[in-house]
Image (cartoon, rainbow, N blue to C red; front, top):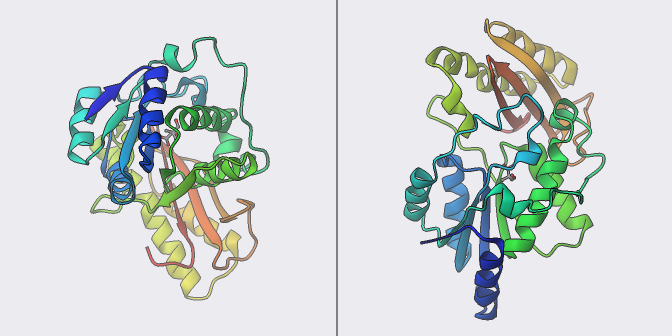
Length: 283
Ligand code: PAF
């Protein structure tokens, strides 16, 4: 496995691979790999000839007061894990490599970024879509793999790729959960045992909502109130949002149907956890 830190070297590497007719798979990450990332790498390994993993904690997608400085970073740990997952190349640029002249050009996806995390983290998605566009231009992948835990991010990236006629095939992979149901996230490492226990209220509230919806309750506000009541039982929980939205438009719905997804963002101390699930599908 190779590690490349320079943008031009990465571009030369993939150009040569493309000239040899190789199918390039790409898993963009901010590192501190977990089982969720593994499912993306495994899928990439299965359907591509060359698998590239990027590790870059992108400063432009963090707001003021967010966890950019404390975000967990450990390239040697990640390199071992990536090698065991069959990654061919790690692309691990520095911020200076990615933004040598700052960043005057931005990719902005309208509408889909207005709700949910877009509303609570202003500018976040411009940071994401801009860096993902740059990474796509550098890595030139045929297929790119993203986790569905960041449901809105996946929808926004798919829209960007479609609107800008990018040729990459964007593939969303299901959320991977710990045995007790907590959605895997690099940020879980911030949680104390007590806060982690409280964090299970997200998946618990999703389960309750699914059960109630399957029993016939179709009113979104009733289901959201149920989820809020469950989260409110936790002493340190501060709800950022709990909404039920249409999976394509990400607009709030009044009545749930097979397109409805419940999305939650809740802070526990300094850690913000997100989770989601289709309301009318088994968890
Ligand atoms: O999901 C992430 O880890 C990041 O938002 C991404 C897609 C790697 C862009 O920095």
